[in-house]
Amino acid sequence: MDAIGPYALPPTLPNAAPVHTAPTRVEPPRAELLPGMEFWLSPAGDRPLANVFTVDVDDWPVAVLGPHCEITPRVVENTKRCLQILAWNQVKATFFVLTRVAERYPDLVWEIHAAGHEIASHGHAHELLTDISPRRFEADVRQSIDILAKITGRRPIGYRAPAFSIVESTRWAGPILSGLGFKYSSSIFPVHHPRYGIPAEPRNIHRWPGCRLIECPPAAVRFLGRNWPVAGGGYFRLLPGPVARAAVRRLNHERLPAILYMHPYELDEHGIGKHKSSGVRVGLYRHLTQALFRGRVEGRIHKLLQSFRFTTMRELLQFAV
Image: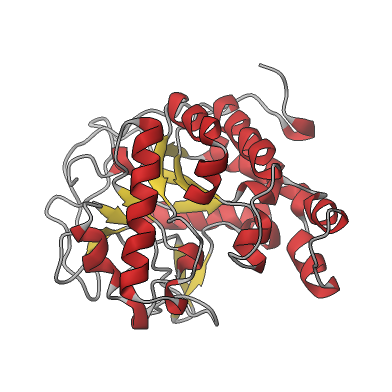
């Protein structure tokens, strides 16, 4: 396979499906632990935990500036670049697809599916749950299910809220997702953040109280009495690569799989300038902060994928869903 940019390196670790053996239970501070919810080593004890690499397939203007923006062709090029990186490193990932993208580029979703990755829902319009009603949320998610099922022939079992916008005030979303047939969500960041997060939420995978939905929180490490986000996105850009990898090792030492995420546009080093030249209005501060260190992301992802074992969320949860 052709090299991908200046950072293309041959894989150094195999990535296979998890092998199940005797469990070790980690109790969350609040929430029902799934029966059998443990993360497995091989019988010989010589294989590391399986982590999960996820991709939120959305376009930068919609994801950052708002759902009023148009979907642009850059999302196709950027997502295909993600697929190349994953193929090079022999990793299968979970893709949370925004179905506004899927409507415009159904062949892209089929390509992800055909490559053996899991297709999950990122909703349809990328409206934050804090800005809409439960009824509107349910309609949005139903639409996303129909679109993805039509393209792939398979209903998604996983969901991620736009901008992790399941917070204390939007916990009503869990029973709705469960009622729509979703098996898991990866929507609650167990950290304090001005725009998202529930700091007291367990960092381990757990069952929602009051419904059958499984919550798979993005990775956060416990340090100095609080949870710190390390899962991906802007944190991939801003944290030094060795710090991010050390955080994954620490989580695995705690017997927690690291659930990581990225957006395809984070690979698009000159993308914000291209959007501006096409007429998208972007302030100087947002341009600088959103573009900072994008050139380092691809190399960091290669090293991350080569340093740890990864699988899809569906495969990790196969005994529970």
